[in-house]
Each structure stands twice: as C-alpha cells, then as structure tokens.
Amino acid sequence: MKTLPTKSSILAMTAIMVLLTSACGKAETTTSGSTTESKPTASAAAADVKKPTEPVKVIWWHSMSGELGKAVDKLVADFNSSQKNVQVEAVFQGTYDESINKMKASMDTKSGPSLIQVYEIGSRFMIDSKAITPVQKFVDADKFDLTQLEENILNYYKVDGKLNSMPFNTSNPILYYNKDMFKAAGLDPEKPPTTYEEIANASKALSKDGKSGSSFAIYGWFMEQFFANQGVEFLNNGNGRTAAATEALVNNEAGVKTLTWWKEMVDNKTSANLGRKTDDTKKAFLAGQIAMTLDSTASLRGIVSGAEGKFQVGTGPLPKPSDAKEGGVVVGGASLYILNNKSEAEQQGAWEFIKFLTNPQTQAWWNVNTGYFPITKKAYDEQIIKDNLTKYPQFQTAIDQLHKTKANTATQGAVMGVFPEARQIVETAIEEALTGKKAPKDALDSAAKSITEKIGAYNKTVK
Image (cartoon, rainbow, N blue to C red):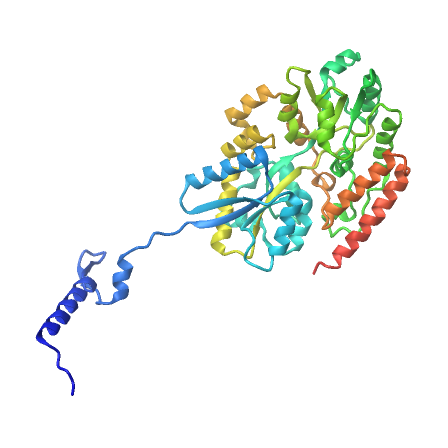
C-alpha cells in the first residue's frame, strides 16, 4: 500500500520549487534595454557566479647560484608583482650540465619546466632535441622588434635565420691587468697589450721577483674565443651553421699558432700554468702574483672590488696575432628556451616573462647587479648603467669589444651537439702541450680526431 504525501510535505516541496524558479528565472537585460526571461536552468545560475581565473604557472629551471641566484629571484618577484595573469616559479637545478641532464630525463614526461636556461654550448642539442618551441614563433606572432636587441648577441642563438632562444646572461672574455705592476715594469698602464706578440713581451717585462707576467686558465672557452678573434671557424660547414658540422678544425693554423704562443710563455716562465680553474688565476691575480689574466666580463665587478685598496685594475680586449684577419668575440653565458610539451597557455606565459626580461629597465638592473651584458640597446640610456660605468669604467672595454665584433660565421660561434665533451677534449690538449707531454700540433691533431669522431656518432642519432 502506497503512503500518500502529507500536507506538510506538499507545502515544503512547493516552497523549494518557488525558490528554484526565482533563482533560475530572473530577467536579463538585452543590449537594446528590453528584458527577456531566461530559461530556469541550473547551468544559467552557475554562469552567474564567475569563478576567479587562476594565473598561468610557469616553472623556470635555472643555474644561477649565490648572488646571481638572488638576482634571479628578484627578477621573478618583480615580474610576478607587475601583473596577475602569469606567475613564474624559479627553480635552481645545479650547474648547466646538471640542469640539461635533468631536462633530458624529463623529456618524455610532464615533470620538466616550461622554461629552461641552457648554456650556449647546449644550443645544437636543444634544437636537435625537438623539445622546444623556437622563440621566433612568438617573435613573429607578437611582431616583437628584434632590432632593439644587440645583433652580436642575437647572432649566436640564430640558426638558419631563426631565433631559437632568447639570450639571458651574456658575457665574453677580456684581459685584466695590474696597472701598478705595469708602472713598476716601465710599461704604459694606460696601454694594454692587444696582440700575442705584445702579450709575450709584456709578460717578459713583468716577470720578476718570483712573480709571473701572466697566467691564463686552461679553459676551452678561451681557445674558441682565440679562433673567433682571428676570424677563423672552429668547425667545418660554416661552424656548423650552414649545415651540421662533421669535422673539428681545432688543429688548423690558428689553433697551432695560439697554443705555440701560449706554450712558449709557459716554457720561458713568463706565464704560469695554474691549471683549468679560472678561480685559481683570479685568486693569483688579486694576490698580485701575476700581472695579467683572462676572465669573463661577468667577473669584472668582483675583480675590481677584490683589488680595491691593493692595486688598480686595467682591462683590455682579447689578444690576437698581429696578422690576424678581422674577427671578434663569441658571446658566452646562456639563453632561455621554451619547452613544447607544455600547454599553449604556459608557453605564452613563458614568452610574456621573456619579454619582461628584455625591457631596458630590467636589463639595466641585471647588468648593474650581475656584470652580464644588457641585451637591449636602450638599457645603456638608463641612469643606473651610466652611474655604473662611471664607477667601473673598465666595463667599457667589454662594450667596445662586443660592438666592434664583425658578424660572420666565426664570431657567431660554433654549434655542435657534443660541445661540452669537445670543450673538455680541447682542455686536455692544451694541458698536454703546456706540460710538454705533446707538441702543440700533435695535441691538437689528437683533439680534432676525437671531436670529429664524437660529432659523427652524435649526428647518427639526430633524425
């Protein structure tokens, strides 16, 4: 037998129906000002309550530690507070090598970043990995004006006329010298040596009282720069830019001439061999044990500050043979890549952050607080850069050197998928020559053969 609804339950149901009808059937105003009755549906009611839009989250992997890491965190905080649509989270991933290896491990998953900082010698691998959306896509879609950026910096990251990543932290090597030791040796402290021959002569004059005239770290980056400064390519096929490189040219005349000059100074004890670490040559320079050294422009503030109260620091351009062809320096440092296994929204968010990083104010702040080049030309109009150049006039050397660099495939820099390994092989060759284990030509012949073999093996893996 069915139970009939009571009077009270009927009244309760009626009340509920009235409430639903009043909530779902309210009048809406049309653009003409008249009213229409909306259909009494739950979805219409839900549409009236707008949920707050969550900002797009962009994960940025970087390799900036210490004071540089603090500078990165400041950039991210400034960007995040400047707008509400994109929020960047910076995650330190160790050295460049460690970071790129972590990225390789994450490529088949969604656990990797939206944006990653990769050192310049990882460029060919990043392109070949097919894991990136070239920055050029966003540049074209946004009609972003690349002419506002430094051409000689952009050139490195362009392959086949396409910009694959946005330069971020950029540097090149310059000569640092002790002006006080120059005076004591009878050399003009305002006229730094600029050629191999002048460096050798100055080293000889400066070597006395147990001190060496110079010391250059056994760093593969320096050899690459010596090639570019002579207008000579490091790899075949236009430094790997007109086609994938298949052969290393490190044992050519430019390489042999450079290593022979370097070895002769070590042999006659006018230049000290302090090994592979630039930190060791930097410490020796600041201690007044050596009069000249090579180091990155990014080290300038630290070196000038470290010498304060002890001696005056002078700077000069990277040396080259007196008969060298026109060349220049290759930018070092790293750039930012957008990963293509993330949503379009995340990729666009990463691009918005990149644009923020390129504005003149951001670049001026970055330069003053880190020593890396501004990539945006108008950054030099900012007062903080003008003030910084007044305080550190030595940085003008680096600016002039960058701007005087002649754009060609030599100064664009070499690109190959095995560059980290190649750099280590070159360092071993330099070490063998400086310690007398091999003649410069023999050491470089072995290095060229080994690098060429590694390039061949790598090229077979690229589809």
